[in-house]
Image (cartoon, rainbow, N blue to C red; front, side, top):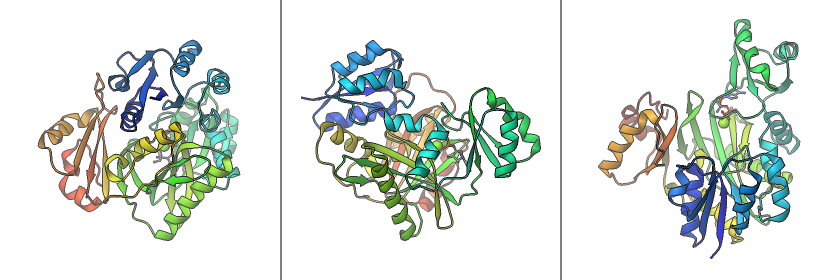
Length: 368
Ligand SMILES: Nc1ncnc2c1ncn2[C@@H]1O[C@H](COP(=O)(O)OP(=O)(O)O)[C@@H](O)[C@H]1O
Ligand SMILES: [Mg+2]
């Protein structure tokens, strides 16, 4: 029996471990928190920091293949391990995604259109970049940002002092894309073939993914170009394993926003919405098994459950409605804005979600 090692024990690690079990493998996760969600389903676990080289090595020793769900594993510890253990995705896709400036340059180099951007290190370069890109624009820290943290939209001169507060670390200024909607694609590539999951439309609230609607309503030609460009990007960059790419769509153009070489929140719908899911195909890749191309089972809406939605989610779980799948991650502490779970509504269109469910959640936006 093979063992999948997972660096990170959050909800992504939990769902990777579940699918490892489905495919007859064991799972071991490493996480700094003793109550990490993935530990409850893993066969073994290690409580240690992400930069604890000895602990990461122990994880590798106990695993046949190692993957990561945490994006900020330092290269200094991972690179030496990649040489000695089976970490098939390697460090490079992580390295390329850990810095927003490098990430956008890399995307452009490999054929994807990005919003215009400038490197910003101080007030003077911010001034020059704002003049070059115009307002509105978005200042982001180059590293460690997530769920809208470390970002500031500059709409007018008055916003610049607040933006300058981000400049204690290197930043990137981006043109603000007045997108029609956001979309994402999850791909898994084993070096021979690439499978891609149906494109979802992503609706954010306060910088956090709120809803993912699949299929994304868009012309088939545009969808096809997006998937094709994503596959070509992955091949051109030489990545294998799993990759999620977020895009802004405006008219018939799409702009690369960011990528993540791990399962993605917008791909959670695949567990029930598709014939195979993002976690299972990642595990197949890790086990060296042939990948299986997914099919969409039915129109699907995924709703993220943050702390403030937990009571509603528990009520919906108790109702046990057909086609409604409530996933709670078992996090011990619930906080507003913390991802506590998600609900997948299968056989559900955006319009039906709006009519039946949107109002049941705190500040829930609709899928329109
Ligand atoms: N250049 C941009 N133009 C318009 N909206 C943006 C831009 N950059 C970010 N946003 C908005 O902020 C959200 C979060 O930004 P993102 O770069 O994806 O960071 P993260 O998801 O890591 O917090 C995006 O999903 C989008 O809604
Ligand atoms: Mg994002």
